[in-house]
Image (cartoon, rainbow over all chains, first blue to last red; front, side):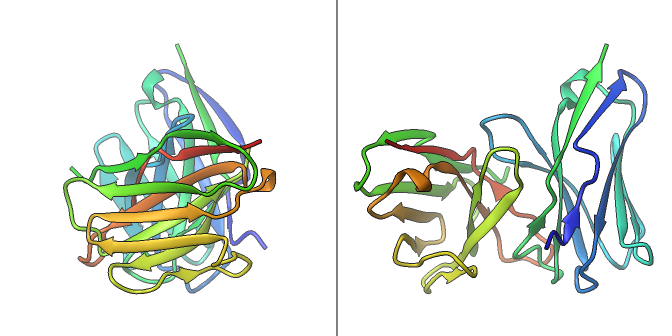
Length: 113
Length: 116
């Protein structure tokens, strides 16, 4: 039972444009959500998080949107850069302390020139 | 900040041997450390959660006698794969987080374990 789903395994975006990565979850107990970026043969790198009391959190080029009623979150990267090319995982936690994360299956983003 | 170091990054060993993987938080005190396993083209699957000074909590289906976890200090946790077999070959990743609320987990670079 995949409680966190990233239905797009891959995404290609032109440099300078917006990248939108989507994530859906089924467990209504999740109340803390994170996005991680991962390069091959490396561990995930934390990007940005959002708690369920908010619907938007912004950090530089990265913005995460949360729609609790739809159980959906998205990561917007604008403008996209070639160095953003990586696999992006969303993760969710049932507590507010980022413990015991459940990860999605990842979306591979390729930013082209 | 928030650097987690994992060692070794790659290990190949014979079936039946035991392998120890270390996970260190270099610039913060890790109240909690986590061990994950990732199969090719799949997501990270949590194996166990360990708090400093206490026994690890294992996820359902993870053999605690096969995967020994020790979290003896606030900066070090180890995972020992005992009597490893080819089916234990995988990518193992640790993460650590501090004790303050809403602190994200910070990950090591993983260990590629290949059992021949």
